[in-house]
Image (cartoon, rainbow, N blue to C red; front, side):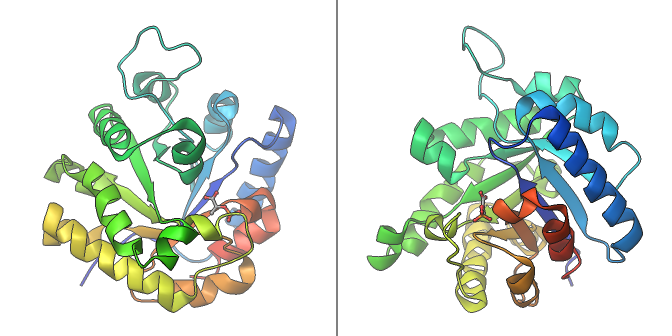
Length: 253
Ligand code: PEP
């Protein structure tokens, strides 16, 4: 019997001014407090400059705030970058690592992600580690191998940090495209991820780690995804920018 957390996480990417962000969080908080009857944990990943404001705005609620990225070094001459200790110093709790857009546009690799995950955990941040194959990799039948390689970034996670680590499976071909992996396709990969994680780390962690699915999750497909044995929630892009859609997804567990 596992005790996996159910999570609805919204990745806002490069969207929303401060005023818009405050408005959206206000709506999400109000709807969550009046409508959300399940135990779903809500995570919101806004742009860096809104983090501190939104951490304060969500105090005492079921909404936790996370960053979309962080640098792997402690500090130094890395113009434009943000460190784990900076995030921690403003009470940020979660951080996305290795989102496919970071891999595609900013050359992040499994090695970089491994360093980031380790650094995040040292500072008490909870990494949401994003993995997933491209369409080309899936069409070539390489999707399982690609994900296996990406999962190596978790190799140094220590048992005391197992409960602080989350995985998000996001097939790149389903992100922002309107294409969703079928519930069976997604679940097949989630089961595979647990098997690989069990080999890299241990069976207990594999059984208990929350694995989110991401890729065009909407209110009308969330329920069928969440009904699957190994899907513990969603990492949501587009639909997380609309409070109604985001909360309706969170209500689908
Ligand atoms: C994402 O950016 O992580 C994502 C899954 O986006 P979308 O829901 O828009 O496909």
